[in-house]
Every structure is written in structure tokens, then in C-alpha cells.
Length: 545
Image (tube, rainbow, N blue to C red; front, side):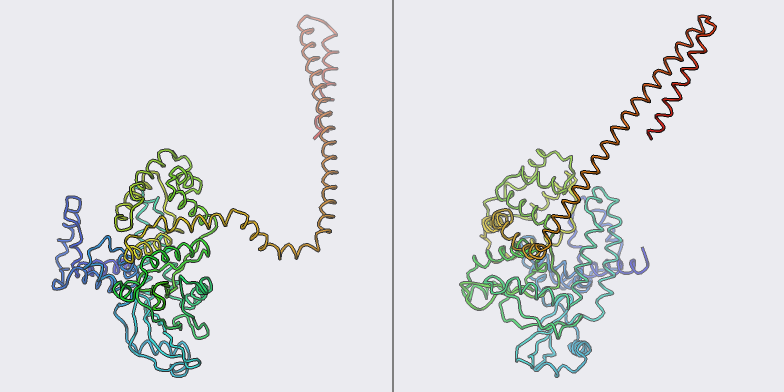
């Protein structure tokens, strides 16, 4: 390891121990070595004994930087895995991270726009509205149209911190294959995918483009609203977009107070996710509660508001098709189909015993059906699925890691909004409808419509193409006939050569027999003619080549 990586690792360990997070280590026989190692680091005591464990965990992750804050944001959605005291503190990482100086943010905006803030905005608020892992948000009013907007500004000097953690993750990834089943996890590919998503989030022009695309995909949709972006004012480190006034999706009390239809809201969360993935192949991959709001209008017909589109994901046609078929087979409890699809897609080795794999999947998944979210322990389910994957040498698919993380977000939100939600009945009709649209008559008609412009362009050239094809076919036929004739000639020559060689060999044998019998002239005559016949056959075989 390089000195910079050792330094960063030391800083991480010191921070975790200074906040007393060693208390999270389970006290059992398996962890005695780790606990002994902790006691040996006596110069790193817990300096925050006066604070609760949840607060210490939040502060530690916040101090370690964006990579760790992202991890905390994901954990905050899984209230089924943590007690409320920890989950509530982790939820603050969504938009209540310690902010940096507002004057520094203003200077960053002015440098990016090459002019004073007052040139484009009124009522710029130096106090940030929200602050997250990568950036913080200020409010203002756009001069040209009086539209209330937010200005998103990247934190200064954040790239070196992210790069330090990424380098350390790569170093650890190089060590993982040395462990049992380590190679199956494909750690380098996973880290590479995570690095790409983080670096993409640092480019706010990319986020602006993502938001515009997502807004276009859900234009006039009752399910999701994406605020308008002002791309002319966006820069790599500054983003200007419409200000929204929704209710944070995590504020359950406020949602109940305004009479929100919680069941419909939870169902639409699932529908929005599957629509993004399968219809658009372009999905918001950072759907933690800090980025999701609910419109204050028409609470009986609730609409989500999505912000922070820095991290998006996409799937190719093959993965999308396999995923949809897997989901439908899973919802129909057709575990044989699930097993076969895993083999066909290459997610498990081709020599996998399908019957054993089917039984293993059935054992894990069958107990969770026909249960609402509140009765399902997904932590236990994921552990069993991981053990099953390890047993059958199933490799981690790096291109699906982002999707899996997003699915965990969605499932966690659904659990908070409406614990009685039947996830299977909500998702199954959408997937069946989508799959039918891909293979039915509608799919054929859509494919024809998509290719019609190309066909129309090539239609005037069709007679010439047909004529050239016929000429080429005629030339090909003539060539085939010539080749057949040459093969016939070669076969005839081969037969003559073989015949001559056979006669020559026979005459040599006869000459040998006459010589042994003591004949004076016959052996030499036969040998002469045998030699002559042999040379003729040899010449014929050479001519054939």
C-alpha cells in the first residue's frame, strides 16, 4: 500500500474508534480477535461517550466523507434492520450534513457564472436550504421570469477525499480474491461501477442532462414530477433548477395530516421504479428519502417529486429482458424458470444442476409470499440468498449492483409509507404488461414504425439492389459450377494416379518373387515396367496439385 493509502486507512480506523463504534462489534466467540485488536489500540479511546450510539455513528460517517455518507443514506432507508434511535440519526445524512460557508458557495457560483449573483438572481439566501454529501443548496429568485429556484453547489475540495477512498477500495478489492469465494464477488468491477457513479455525481452538467431526460420521460405523469432545469445557467459545479415545495417522503406525520392516500402512494413508488427500469431503461439510482418529496396538491391522488438526478442507471436489452422474466417467474413461484433463466443468462455456471438450484431458490423465497412488507425480514432473506449464490458459484453482476441498491431504497420507502403493501401484487401486473408489449403484435407494429424511415430511405434503391443481387447470384452459380468441374477433374486424376501407383506396386512385388525364384530375365522386365508405372502415377498426382 502507498503511504497516502496507509494514512487514509489510519484516519478511517481512528475516526471509527474515536466515536466508539467498536460497540457495534458483536460480543461472541467469533469476534474475540477483533475485540483483542481493539484493546491493543489504547491510544484511540472513545472521545464522545456523552453522545448516543446513533449520533456517534452519524457524526463518524459525516466526518469520513461522501463515500461513507452515501452508505449511511442507504442504511437509513432500512428501518427494519436498525432501532429507531440509530435510523433517525442516519436519516439526517440525507439532507442535514454539516454545511460549508455560504459566502464560499456564493463565490463559487459567481466564478462559475463569471459575474455577481445579482446579475441573474434576486433574494439570494446565503444560508443553505439543505446540505448533503456532495453539494449544498441555496435559494433565490430568477430575474428573467420571477421563478423561485435553487442553486446547487459542489462542496469545495471534495474530489481528493473521494479519490482517496476509491483508491483504498481498489486496494482492498485486490485482496478479496485471495479469500474463499472472493473471486466470485468480482470486487474490482463493483468498485469500478461505484467509482463511475460517484464521479458522475460531481459533474452537475451531467445531472442537469439526467434531470431533463427524466422530466421528459414522465411529462404529464400523475406518478412523478421532475423540476425544471435551467441548462443555460448550469456549470460543472453549479446547477440551477426550479424550487419545489413538497413534503419530504420521510415525514410520515405530515403526509397523514394532509390526508395522503398512503396505500396509493406506496404502490406508485413501486410503479415509478419499474417504469423507469423497464419502460425507459433510465432510472433514478439515488432514491433515498432526502431526494424524494410528495406534492402538497391533490393528496388523494399523490404525486412524487424527484430531485438530485446525479446518479442514474440503465440496463441493456438482454439484462432487462432476463430481469423481467425472472421477476414474473418469481411472482408466479415458477422457481424452475428462475433457475433456467439464471443459467441461460450466464449468471451461474452452465453446468449448474437446475433441479438443485430450483430447490434452493424455493427454500429461500417461498416463506415470504403472501405477506405484507411489515412481516418480511429482508435482511434474513438477503443472507439466505447470498448463501445460495455462494453455494452455486453465482457471480456478482456489477451492472446490476446499482439496480439492486435502488430496489433496496424503494422497498425501504414502501415499508415506511405503507407496511401492509403487497409488493408482489403491485409489481406483477406492470411487468406482465411490459413483457407482453415486447413480444406481442404491438411489439411487431412498433418495430415496423421504428424502422419505417430507414425502409423508406432504401425503397428507391430496391430495384437496383435486387438487380445487383441477381447478378451476384448468377456469378456465384457460375463459380460453383466451375468449382464442381475442377473437383471432378481432380477426382478423375486422383483415381488414375492411384491406379498407376497400385499397378507399379504390384509389378514390384511380382519382380521380387521372380527374383527369389531364380528367373534370369523376368524380374528385371517387371521391375522396369513397375518403375515406369510408378513414375507415371507420381507425375499424375503432382499434376493434380
